[in-house]
Image (cartoon, rainbow, N blue to C red):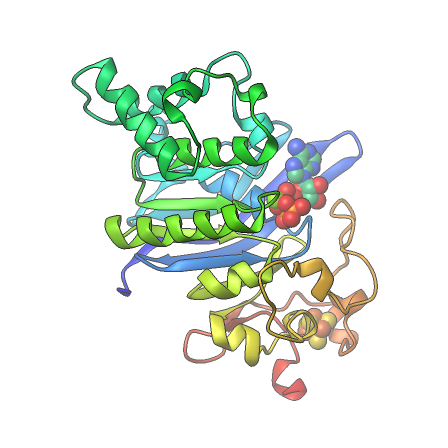
Length: 326
Ligand SMILES: Nc1ncnc2c1ncn2[C@@H]1O[C@H](COP(=O)(O)OP(=O)(O)OP(=O)(O)O)[C@@H](O)[C@H]1O
Ligand code: SF4
Ligand SMILES: [Mg+2]
């Protein structure tokens, strides 16, 4: 792993302007991603993982809007790019496999057409035959049997797990430098999960790809991630290397989550030993958003937002009291 920063997200805020009020979904998130590493992102449902990635790619659907922040990719702020420039970046430089492949694949085109479109946009191909061949190879790589005939099938002809693999094949079609995989193994059986994880490892090794892995499966995160960022209610809690997060966490939320080193198949929700629910982000708690559920909360916690900062050795924490708690 090199120490070159590939992506640096600073103070990202993305809100949704709904009839029920303003959903403060991502409220000042920071993420730095080093070239070649695998960063795991964890947090309960609704913590802002997907919205963060959609913001980085600048594909937030209405009524959402990026309010502020910098998204530095190779030192250039993606927030200042024109849409035409973003079209060149998406898929080729930075790609995402979506959490819900049912909505990310277009039902009126064959899966082959959808993958070929990405290949033709970003890569030099001599002929349609060459693009077809590459697509067949990709489908084979992600474990689709009989890809020569399946390539001309429509998304609705596949099961949920198969659709997920097809969406995944499309995301990696142009060998992006940075891949966001949002729950890539959810709904797949264990054998296919293992195949996908091996495939990701190979991709990383062969193309020096940088991977951001979002998963509820703490076993997958433990197996794959070099570093882990823990989010809660649209903000950072803690970021550190994998072993520190699992064995020596400092933030009360991470401490409560990481009671044991899980095996593949253990979801974050099963690890949860914390009473209460993630807050309504239209009316989030003042100060530290975790304070209503935190056993260590003091009056300052409901008044002041804890600053997310380096506690030493690149171990970042947002908590007023982590030193006392230790
Ligand atoms: N289109 C939208 N309109 C309104 N609110 C939204 C929209 N999309 C997301 N949100 C809200 O933004 C917050 C963060 O959602 P996000 O999908 O990023 O969570 P997540 O961490 O990816 O959760 P999960 O683990 O369930 O995938 C949630 O409160 C969600 O309800
Ligand atoms: S800032 Fe306070 S409420 Fe928040 S995690 Fe730390 S101790 Fe708990
Ligand atoms: Mg999500």
